Length: 140
Image (cartoon, rainbow, N blue to C red; front, side, top):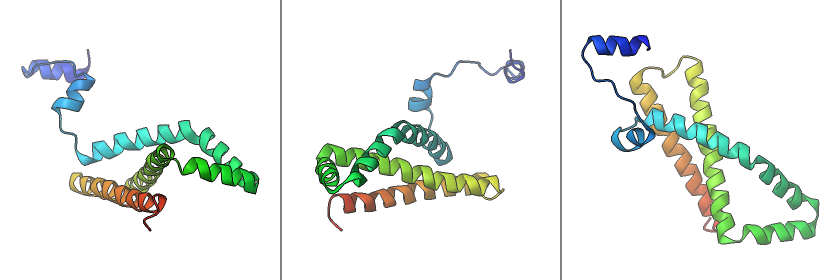
């Protein structure tokens, strides 16, 4: 039994196990927790898709014919959604990584600054993803 559990029992606090459904349904996560979780998820997804992305890149630069074939694949709506999701993952991971670099240098460590910078990461990554979507769908 951990020291924290022993101390909680001495104070008469109820001890219970917390499941994943408790975390997702019953607890409101602060922005810094959301950014941290999404940073890990986006890094994992980018790692999984890296061989696929490298293959597509290699195919796109092989020849003019392979580039035309690649352009045809990218014009499919499902492919655009996948590209947009991967773009969000990259942009969020990049922005959250910059935030972590600042925090590693002892900047924005107090609670209010950490929550504020987490909100900035969420907003900036979503705005950049919106710009990618506009470009991807030919609006700009």
